[in-house]
Image (cartoon, rainbow over all chains, first blue to last red):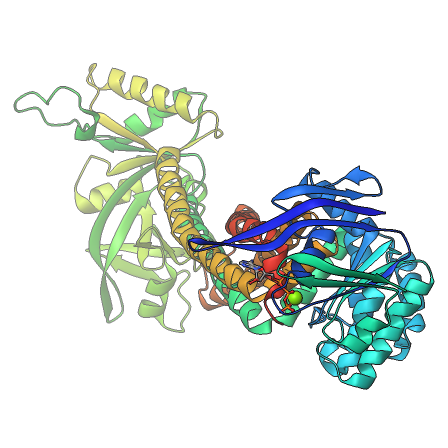
Length: 224
Length: 403
Ligand SMILES: Nc1ncnc2c1ncn2[C@@H]1O[C@H](COP(=O)(O)OP(=O)(O)OP(=O)(O)O)[C@@H](O)[C@H]1O
Ligand SMILES: [Mg+2]
C-alpha cells in the first residue's frame, strides 16, 4: 500500500541543517500493525507527518496505492487525507466548543456529507468506542482517555485505509492508555492499517511489526 | 465540499464560543451602522422639514417683485432709473395667460390695531379673495374677504389666531368693529392656527382688502404679487407670460423679478441631499474603523486557533475551505453587528422622531440597505487577509502548538 523510496527531510535551523530523515526506504502492506520507537529527536513524528501528507520530503518518492503522491497539488493531497487517512494525536486536538459528537462528525461535516448519514455514522463510531453516552459532552467535560477515544472515533469515521497515531497514550495513565490501544487494535483487526509512534516498549511490543529509528534512519525492522 | 448550513453553523458556534471578542466586534459594527442610520435619518428629516416649510406657502407658486434682481448679472441699471411700481391693474392683467390660475396682489404694512382699550402694532396684509387659496389659508370661523372689484376696498378684515386672543380674549370677535390706524373695520373671519410659515407668523396678522390697505398706507404700489400657476408643469410658461405681460405694460421695460418656488425648493433639496450624503459618509468611516477592528480580532483569533486550523487541514479540508470558514465568520459577525446597528439606529430614530414634533426623523431605505451592505462588505474585505493567513498555515507547525 505504501512505498517510501530514499526519503530525505531536512530542516534549516539558522546556519545548520538538521537531517530529520535520511534516505528512508520502507514498504507497508495494507492491514499491517506497525509501531515506531526510538529516542527523542530520531525523526518518528517527521516520518509520520510525511506518511500523513501533512509534510513534504525534500527528496525521494512516496507512493500511496501505487500512485506517487508527493507531486500532487495541495487540494489533491487534502483529498487523499480526507478519504484515506485518519490521525490520532498525543494532545487529542478536539475542538473545545464542539460537543463530542460534533467533534467525531467533523471530517464528514467538512466533506459535505448529509446530516442524517453523518449522525448515523457518528452514533455507530461512538458506540464502538464505548463513548455513546458522552455524545453531548464538551471535551473539557471528558477524561483524557475518553477524549482520546473521541479522537479515535473521529479518525475512523471516514473509514480510512490508514490510521496514524503519534504517541496516542503519551498523555494518558496506564489503564486508560491500554483502553486506547485496544480501541486502535480493534480497528486494525477490521483491516485498517495502523502505524503508531510510542515511547512505551511494552505497548510498542504488541505491534506485529516494530520499527526502530535513530538519527533519521530506520535501524531495526522486526516482524513477528 | 462543505454544506453552506454547516459552514454557517460552524462560524456561529465559533462566535458563541468566544463571547467577549464577538460582543466587541458586534458593538463596533453596530455603532458604525447605527451612526449611518441615525445621521441620515436626521439629514433626511432636516431636508423634509425645510421642504415642508416651503410647501406650506402653497403649491405652484410664482412670486413677482418690483425691481430687477441684481443677481441675474444683467446690464447695470441706467442712472436715475427707478423701478416702476406694480399696480393692481398689472396684477389683473396677468389673467390673460392661460398658464396662470390665481393672482393675489399683496400690500404689506404695519399699523396699530385697537379694540376698546386694547391696542397692538400688527402686520397688515392687503390682498384679495384669491389669497385664501394661493397661500392655502384655513379659516377657524367666519369667511375670508370676498371676491369683489379689487379697486374698491370695503371695511372688513380677517384676523389671525394670536391677534384674536390678544384683542378679544374670550369674547366673540366676529362682527365686532375694530380700528386699524384711523379707520374702522368689521371682523368677518378668523384664521385657523397654522403655525409659522417661513418665519411669518400667520397668527399675528390682520388681512384687509387690497384697496383698503392701499388707502391705509397711502400707496398705489403693490409689495408683491403671488401667483398660482395652473399646474406644476405650467410654471415655466407662467413665468414667461408674466415677464411678457408686465414688460408690455411697463413700456418695454423688464423691471420685475420673478421667483418660482420650485427653483428655491430644488436648491434646498440639493443642499440637504448633499449634506445627508456627507453625514452618511462620515458615519461610514466608523464602519471602516469597525472593519479594521474585525481584522485585528480575527488575526488574534487565528493565532489562538492555530491548532484548530492544523486539525482542519489534517482532516482533509482544502485551503479554500479553511479560508471560507474564517471568511464566513467575519461576514457573519459584521452582518449580525449590522443588523444590531440597524435596530439601534431605527430605535433611536424613532425616539428622536417622538422628541421633535413637526420634524420627522425616519431613516431612508437606501441608508439602511447601504449601511448593512457596507458592513457586510467591510467584514469580508477585512476578514480576507486573516482568512488567507489561516488557509496558508503549515499544518505540522499548527498542530505541534499544544492545546
Ligand atoms: N519544524 C522543524 N524545524 C526544525 N527542526 C525540526 C522541525 N521539526 C523537527 N525538527 C527536528 O527534526 C528532528 C526529528 O524530529 P521529530 O519531531 O521527528 O522527532 P521525534 O522522533 O518525533 O521526537 P520525540 O520523540 O521527541 O517526539 C529533531 O532533531 C527535531 O529537532
Ligand atoms: Mg514526536
